[in-house]
Image (cartoon, rainbow, N blue to C red):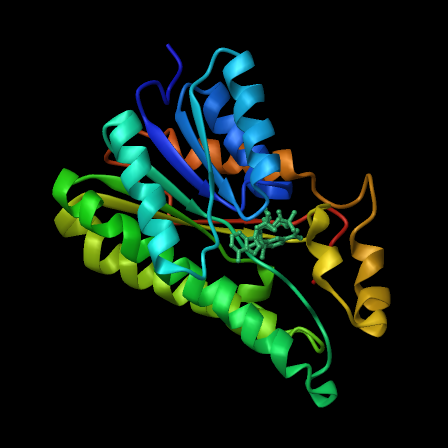
Length: 249
Ligand SMILES: NC(=O)c1ccc[n+]([C@@H]2O[C@H](COP(=O)([O-])OP(=O)(O)OC[C@H]3O[C@@H](n4cnc5c(N)ncnc54)[C@H](OP(=O)(O)O)[C@@H]3O)[C@@H](O)[C@H]2O)c1
């Protein structure tokens, strides 16, 4: 039997990269999938693909910066599938640049999406998890949530924050409420994330890490997420750090 049969998963940022691969992988393991992102046509196409493969999926437009939009996603998931078992808080951006360049609007956008977006997602699903006395938060931190790199200070700050929030969630909710928490910490994964970098110098500096055949593929991270959420109820996989073999830092 597929391990995630009758489970329901919400994935934010499912329109590309890690989110899209994770949505597909979870659906292939039997989960009902709620795929969300701002680019609705992409998540709609993904949901169609899941249904064509014999799975169940719902596509919803959702900007994680808007609390009401994430709440609507949880309501819709509950109505369609009867509950929510897994939230993959994956949506994120990475507009790297040196602090001295003062790309302040990008700093604020990174905080809004990578931290506040995760908080909005947690806040939206938490009442349901508490009511169910079960649920699994999967958050996307990064190697950048463990190390600071020049040109990545704001992005690193957001990924450190995701790790801190997730550890707090675990401590407060795992032992007493049966709510599990997994922090995923990838190294370089070849996705559209680099397209969020507007600073040519930062893009040039990071490109060598993101080469086909060297960088991780989104499916590599999706497999780790499937592993974490497929464990028996007494197993809480707290952190998974995955680097490409070639990546030193
Ligand atoms: N790629 C890497 O090397 C790497 C390494 C470590 C951690 N991560 C983390 O993994 C996560 C996924 O990134 P990725 O590499 O898969 O990049 P990606 O391909 O660019 O995907 C990012 C996703 O986030 C969504 N998103 C961005 N802003 C959003 C918003 N305001 N509301 C809702 N969704 C939003 C995008 O969808 P829309 O634009 O359609 O909304 C997209 O689906 C991010 O949190 C990233 O920080 C990535």
